[in-house]
Length: 517
Image 1 (cartoon, rainbow, N blue to C red):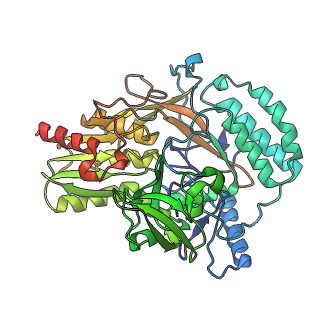
Image 2 (image 1 turned 60 degrees about the vertical axis):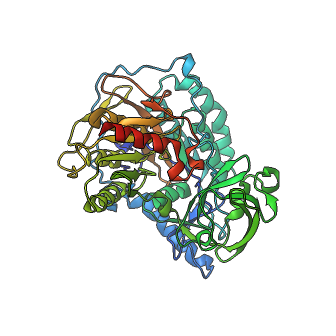
Image 3 (image 1 turned 45 degrees about the horizontal axis):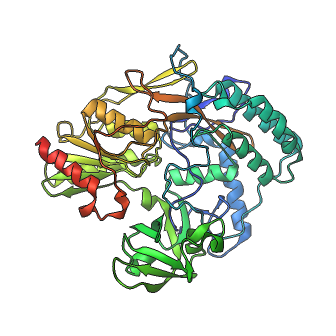
């Protein structure tokens, strides 16, 4: 439930509630048509134009920027922009503990909650239009607004041990001297990254555009249509897009990429900062040569022609029936506008085939998203109730589940939720909620422990500050920030290495449900 308004740090009216989620500028996929936005190697996005006409691209980018700055009120509920009647939560006294010296090891904003996932952007598809120039006064104004917003609203009053006044004194001269918009936005990112939590961040106008496009399922890129994890042997393919170049070439999940264009996959010095995945991606219509190994077979070389890939395909909710009438629901992300609708549709279709005796919900690769989407999905399994609250310095917002949305056939069957150390933010809240309200059994390893909730501030240039201001608290007052959800059944396994029928955690989940019947 992201809200969009221009911000003024000196006035509370500029503060707008963002639901907790983990935004990532980079994508874990290798790589559209007549696609709406394309992701570039420097983290920017732009409209794709197969005639390579820069003039049209500049017009489209200008229109997008105009929408970012002036069009928020026209966006519908559930997208990044919401109507402007969203109010700041009512302030009430809370007992939120302040961080102690033992909490100083919170991951920096540069760490990812998917440590083994290859996160790299696409090779440049088209020259990126230049960001709008900013005057010295504009830069200083945005800098001051951001600094004051953090000072007045950041969740941790001691700024995680950071001297916030010293940060301003150090960076303000650099802001004044910034020669380009890119240099200015780099400084702003650095300032927020120093807070040292795993949620807060500053985004340039183009990064905001990328997040908007991804949330709406409009972000595309050029590649072969796979998701890849870096392992010791190379790049382990975990998903293949149906009908994409990799699928058409016969590449399967669990195949390993040993080399890209003859260069070993893990030779980072040869590939540069973008790594091997950056080399796999590229202009649609161009080719890339992969060395692929499958099981004990001899490696083979495959040449593929890159195509435009829609990132939304990697975020689709899926449901299927396993042996014994057990349902398997996979929710890869809550950071999709219609993930709740996708879930309802998938489960309705599954139940049309016959009743279920139990269901397994897989959120092992879910790093968070919109809270209202998460709550709506819990509402399919349980009617109403509270899963806790989001609490900050002087506020508390109850997290209540909507009523009247349950699906017949889901409210009384046993539930297992699969989690991993990649399960984060809203996905952790979902897991806790299903345990509280549906007595779900949790299987896997402890979750990430990243449950800070974000509030958003949009600035006149189209940039945005996402600031951790509240944290998720269980009904008994317990915080899971830094500790995560502890599973009922601890099964340590690199689950993504296995085909579903051999997945150790999934097999244990099936046994749990079988024993519950």
